[in-house]
Image 1: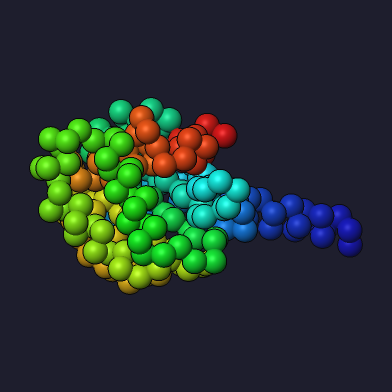
Image 2: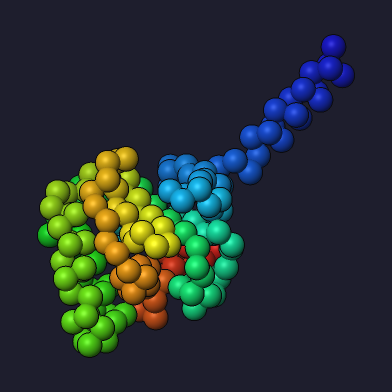
Length: 189
């Protein structure tokens, strides 16, 4: 009987291994299908911290894994950034302040002027606080733009690869929101 059970348990454990990753109580899938039916794989995940507080788990999904930011920004494929909030409540004002700081640190004044209308639309998606267990999904779909969703409800779409790149640089740029989060999303941890 034990000889029969052991292979069965091994088969079950193998079928579940590699299916999901966990960090700070948040479990994410290893693979998913994008809005344009591209297969995306988990590139990496990390923890956004502010002083000693854990704010959210950020996960990056790409068509092809990479730890090279220039390569990620130039890939002509879909990508996803998933933010799973673990802190009790982050106010709308603090969210927008963090996004604004991320855009300003990683973009030139000229680039910000060009993108300002799109950035303002993005800020409008964060008129409510982010609470523990809220999930924001930022999906870039080539030719369609960047979809932003909260808890599986589409908040809107912003066109342009230029906006997508500026947004991704909040997490992966030269001046990321959190250096350890960047490393995690690049799969370097």
